[in-house]
Amino acid sequence: MITDFWLHPSLILIVGAFILPFLPKWLKRPYLIIVPTLAFLDVLSMQGQHGTFGVVRFLDWYLTFGRVDGLSMVFAYIMTLMCIIGTIFGLHVEDDFQHVAAWLYVAGSLGVIFCADYLVLFLFWELMAFASVFLVWFRRRPESQAVGYRYLLVHTAGGLALLAGLILRYQATGGDLSFGPIGVGSPSISTYLIMVGFLLNAAVPPFHAWLPDAYGEATVTGAVFMCAFTTKTAIYALARAFAGMEILVPLGVCMALYGVVYAVLENDARRLLAYHIISQVGYMVAGVGIGTELAINGTCAHAFAHILYKGLLFMGCGSVLHMTGKSKFSDLGGLYKKMPMTFVFTMIGGLSISAFPLFSGFVSKAMIVSAGFEVHNYWAGFFLTMASAGTFLHTGLKVPYFIWFGKNNCSKETWDKAADPPWNMQLGMGIAAFLCILIGSYTPYLYNMLPYQQAAAAYHPYTAYHLSETLQILLFTALGFFLLIKKLAPEPKISIDLDWFYRMGGRGFLWLAKRPIQWADNCVSEAYRYVGLIPLMTMASFWSWFDWHAIDGVVDGLARTVRGVGGLVRRVQSGQLQYNIFYAVSLVAVALVLYVFA
Image (cartoon, rainbow, N blue to C red):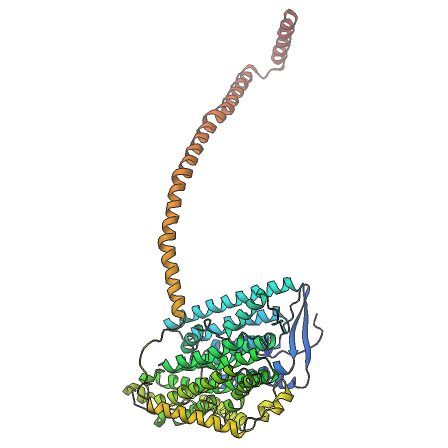
């Protein structure tokens, strides 16, 4: 029974996704804009109406589909806004099922954000995984199929870990399924299993290798959606349940540095951006681990800003791939002449992610670093500051230089095809670029949405110290880039990541299964054949013979005797009543005589 009517934005997207394939072609483009816009307006209508909605009775449980508060609203706002931007960017895609998969994917993310219990969370968590894998498969390359299966396998394993944690927590708490602070002060095995399920979606090493593979191999529009939702939904789940979990601080710092190192080494533009997602999500994971109001505000603000500038960067590099068919730096160069608008938008994304003043990253990233120093976690603040220099090195400098400037490595065919993408792709990039500048220049737009308003009001990013520190980092990083530019030149090679251990472990397991284990199984089978199977078959043959000749012989012999006697009796019967009476009387007389003389 539904206790309160509440229109879930996921419902709008799910219903819209199933209607889309049946619409006439002329109606599809306006419909593609209307549906995510309605979901966004639905989220806007919830502002100021905090509470619990959409409570449904299912068996012995009450499932809560709607929990509206400051934390859920800031994530729902940017998720639905990014759905509009991503859909506009993909308006040229004529494959309806790409849009269906994207909307179902966003619906899963919004379902997690608004849910208040773990059963609903798990339902939408799995919807995210199974919908998003099609954004990889729809590229329809042999590599896409393999990468998609790997992506699905990894996320299924993460979902199983999450499910196991939910079951253990359900038993330990006597049936409590509420999704909220999990009690990080005294974690149990269920706590760690749930956290592992969340950390896998957040791409925390060593559970991260699926991300650069999937995002680098997804469709052009699919990668724009994927970069925005999976990891940030995981950040929301961590912020909701694990705020203050101290182990997340070193994990987040390692992520920030790890992603930077591999992004610098990467030759493929979209894989570089994917590795840098790991780095930027590391800031958010560390912020959740710090757990103060300022840190959680910084996590939310950085997730908000990251969705926009990372989506903008994926749209820019995706536009290059869409127009030229190339995404490797070693195949590109000098394209600012051919794609000037895409160049401008990509530069705005690069400046935003590098935390350049007046751009979005400047007002969000530093909030987490400041929270680290505020709680005397100096080492975390120092390493996160160092990671920001690496961010500017590869995303603010390497990506623009080797795509738009630098040596022209384009083939004649690539150069001839290069041009700014269709209007809808430019419009999507333009909206994201405008918001990146708006957030950085007018901080109340973002800060007024943060869950802890008092902490947000007390934080001021544009201080002299912060400005001078940031500019020094950026200038020295730029100097280092141009001094070492030959060392940073892209090379067409593959960087070995931690998934190498998975692959080698898989090969080792396969060898173990095919050789020693198979040999042992064959030995056991042969031993069973000689020790167990042959005696068993011999005994079965004996009992078959005994059954046929002894048991069946006695039974069949008795039957034949009865049948013979019956035949004789039948011959004696003549069919005349007087003879039958005579024979009967005679037999009775003989019997009486034998009895008397006996």
